[in-house]
Length: 73
Image (tube, rainbow, N blue to C red):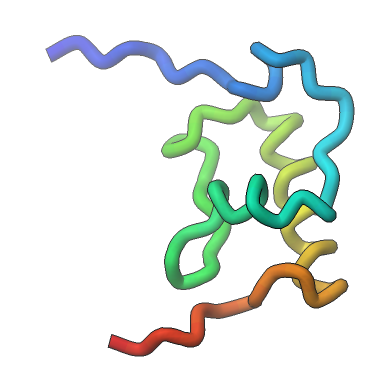
């Protein structure tokens, strides 16, 4: 089975800055437990993964994103 190479969506769309205030966008890159999804799963390049991590951490610090999920199974 041949897997297709994952393409970074940020380099494809030529994103200059990842804004920490776009909460819905940042939630796509966090798991249900609130963890940041690694680049090997999302396919983002290393440069954008670092920017994404900074943006998620800033949003958490500002109170826009939760550190952990409230739901307990």
